[in-house]
Image 1 (cartoon, one colour):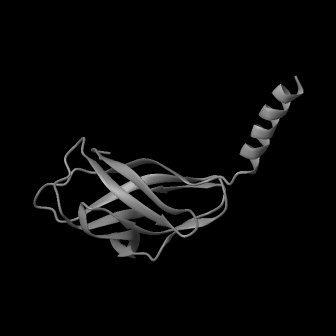
Image 2 (image 1 turned 45 degrees about the horizontal axis):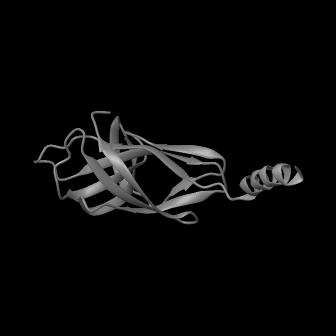
Image 3 (image 1 turned 180 degrees about the vertical axis):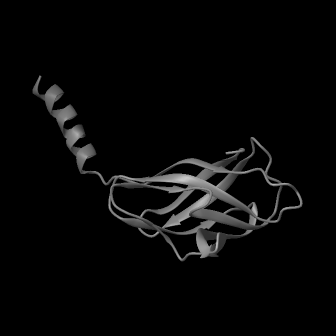
Amino acid sequence: MRKLIIVPVLLLLLAACSPQTLGVVDAWGRPSPSAATNAAFYMTINNPGEADQLISADSPACGVTELHEMYDKGEGVMGMRPVEGIEIPADSTVTLQPGGLHVMCIDRLEDFSPGDSIQLTLEFQNAGTMTVDATIRES
């Protein structure tokens, strides 16, 4: 009888002590006409653990992949520029979304049609490499 109680308790303790890892949900991108050479990917990054940073991204569907942000250039004009990393604070959720932070696909190598799934490899400073599939949809 004691063994039956001890095993579940040990499993709960192990689960509580194991490091919590980053999770990426709802990765997506917009359809891109064949004439467009660039596209962007968006997602939500959940971080239940310690602070981390998204430091790079890669995709076989893109010639070059960069981390970007939109910013206000003034006089009602928005601009876009690369960033060296995207901070993922401890115990937080960071959303990459249109008009803000995003993964930029430069020199797109294939059409992005609704329903397609595009593979992205994300590299985090502490959590390491994570591969996700981004669904192509309107929004």
